[in-house]
Length: 535
Image (tube, rainbow, N blue to C red):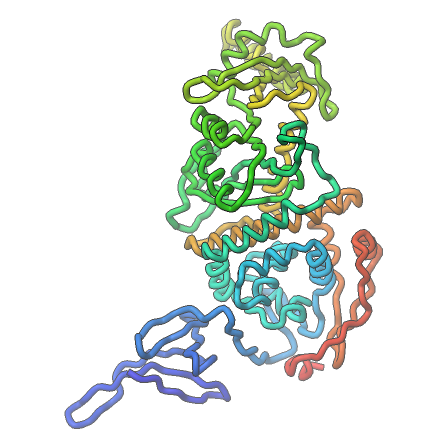
């Protein structure tokens, strides 16, 4: 076997050819088209079937192009670039959102953690993160976005073709890279000083703050077949999904750590391993806040043995809940038990409960009655009673349970503080909302685990950046998606020696002023040969 090279229309092409003997003659046998030659010395080629790839004539093995390989720019014909029905000039760049992102993200200090991943082509890594944060489009549109935006000026050596992105995600998600990233990223998050610093509510030992975490999970539906995708029934919703567990830092509200499991793994079975991974990453958890799906006796034992105080909600069918209701429900609605929280009224009665697989661990139970929820549920109870489908005993039982829920804490917390403490878990719900919306967790159409790991790491980073940005935008009344949408309409024109930006309108100026960013009128720039040919 040998590789034959030929020149067509100024481009070099390669064909893998075999030699066979035909009597006294040696003739060409079967041939395989390797496509256009991108780097002859390193054996890098491109064709329609494989995209960009390597081929080693000595071993006959195909491989992926190394991360530091930068594909030569393909000379474009015509005045425009097209993506489906979209047609854009390469002399007019989408500017404002990319410029704002670059200024903002550099100010947060998070790029040190990004660079810790160690991906060889930093431009690809940073351009990809920019795309995850600023664009709602799937990764298949990244190359078009890159071609028509200021990103191609900021990150000139980025490889944003769909295949190269998949290869980059697979390498970003390697275990070695993942660990380097988390060690630096966790250091960044725990050292953050957010404007909306949350108190410890008396849960941090020795008066220290900052080690509290919130643990929750969400499902990511995935239509692609892979071992991690499994049928899940969660809160009555059945879907084919991967389940992602997030650990959110209580004080800052930023995602701290992430792991994933097959969709059919129940939440309660993941707590112990999540704590062990956090320990392996050097995270000293001083307090954990869990939703009801995570509570069982084994998890309670694990948290006690690890010395991690916790607060959790328990399901209404749990024995702790039913026993407490029998003993405490009658005296719950007393004036001494009335508590105000966040504009609502609650009755809360505190008592001692026993947790763990052997019910031998002392804790504190808080039977809570939400009067707003009770009112709504009582209307439903009345409607069912009107239909005559229930006996008076069943109706009374439902009336007694309306609006009730129960919290359990391994340490005693004042009744006036327990709701404030528990509802800090809304931070993790907000993180999931951002991640699934602007942060690109969805849609999930990934076929292998290597790419999935890299994708989820990028979504964690993008969600963290969006959370910091959202916190800074709260007082303006502008949402994150609105800010990027407004700024994306500011363009920049490519001229022989510079980029000239368009005038920002009032709403753009308001966003820039909020972050003390000054938008330049002109940016020095040397156009490419293609751009000069279009001028």
